[in-house]
Image 1: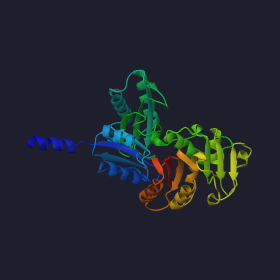
Image 2: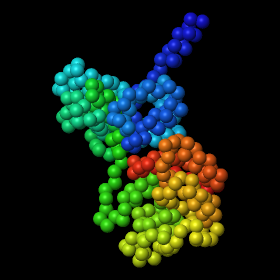
Image 3: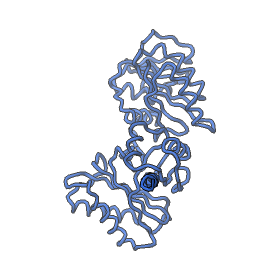
Image 4: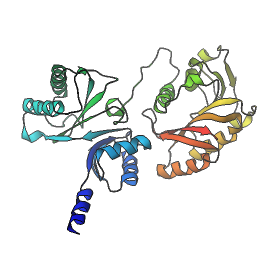
Length: 354
């Protein structure tokens, strides 16, 4: 009996620490998703409305496995906390040496592998931490150990977050962090002549959902103006029908693969199963947008894909998500829902028609 109790106590004591990041204003919903997934969550705010330090009642491998198998909607980035360094206990040079020693002692890192060093700070007054100096020390030490330090496409990421009193350090793969960008803050370079920043949203959706937009043949863009999403579909080689009573950007109008219907979506009719892709990025209320897309689903062939942005304009986004999921699920398989970096008060859905 005593052995059984001791075993139960040991199981209960298994925990792991993480620094979790969401889009600004949505970290509370990411925390609620973690609570529903893992049970009790102890949390401390590091950056208000955006970054928290959490302790979960499961080990690191289980957290990674579950988040990769069934990703959360609002959790943008996660990094393990495997070691903590109190700022009051050492000077900068001594602390940098201790962090480097911890990193070099990790048995998973080997000569010839590539490592990205990613550093973030809670605020400008987050202790006496010179991140540039720390990064230089780590990269020099890793190079001396036979590893290549890179910015992108690394085997490993050394994640460092400097809080007010503590430096948190973890080592993981890019996949384990849910993103290979520091804090998950994916950025695309603005192109000359780019129609709108909305294009970044569809670019990110393509990457986040593992899609190849060039594999589709004919797309319908609902609420297309001024044409940010339409422009990307045309670049990928699709034939595109764009619906919107507003004006499309003049640079698109000479494209022979584009048909523009200057109407409301409720006023148009298409052939059954005409499209293999439907996209919609409109600033409508969630349920209005759902009805609009559902009314045009007859034009999406079976097995076709829908990428839809849902505005979370109400105070209960989790309830809104449940409501729209219930409606969409009548005709579509929801493959993934995610708040993208380029989403604001919205999420993006990737769905496939039954």
